[in-house]
Image (cartoon, rainbow, N blue to C red):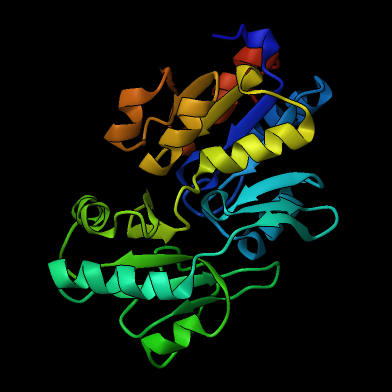
Length: 274
C-alpha cells in the first residue's frame, strides 16, 4: 500500500461522495481539493453521470482537465469540451438484455444516456429520474430510446429493490452488458467489460500515473472495481454495505465532508470554518 505522501491521483465519485445531497460542493471540499492541486497531485472525477451532465460541476470545481464519465464509458477533456475516448452500448444488445430481464421480473422502466458531449438523457413513460435536478427528455415509447448511439441504459422496477433488480439482471444478462448499481433507483446496463476501473486506468495512463499512486473515494457498488484498481479505497459513511466490505477505510458521510476529512489528513490544511 502506498504511503500517504505518494498519492498523486485522487479519484472521486460525485453523487453520494463528493457532492452533498443538493448537488452542491461545500467550501471545505473545495478548499481540500485546492490544497491537493497546490501539492501537485491530480484530482479526477470518476462518475456514472455522462459528460453533458458533468460539465457544470467541473466548472464549479475549476476543472479543465480529464474526467471519467458514464461509468467508465467516456474519457472527457473538460478544457477542450471533447471526448478523448468513448464506447457505446450496442442498441440491439440493450433491447435483448431488457427483454431477458423483463422475462424474469416483469415490466421495468428504462432510460438511456446518449453518447457524445451533447447527448441527451431520454426516459420512457413510467421512468422517474432518481436525480430530479438532472435534465431529461421524456419520449413516447421505448423504441424512441434507440434513436441515437447510447452509452448506457438505466433501469427501475415498480416493486423490486435496487439490489434485487441488479442481482436478477446480472444473472440473466450474461455477456451482453455490464450491470452496475450506482445509487438509489439507479441500476444500469453499460458496455460489456466497461467499469469505472477501466476508465480510471485509461485516464491514469494518459496522465502518466499508476494505480500504486491512486486513492479512490466512493459510495456504491459501481465503485468496487475502482477500489480494486487503486492503491487505497475509501468508502463514505453513507456507502452501500458491499462497498464498505471491500474498503480500506471508511470516512465521514458526503454531508459531513468525508472526502475533505481524508484529504486534510493526507495533504495537510485546516478544516474550513463553516
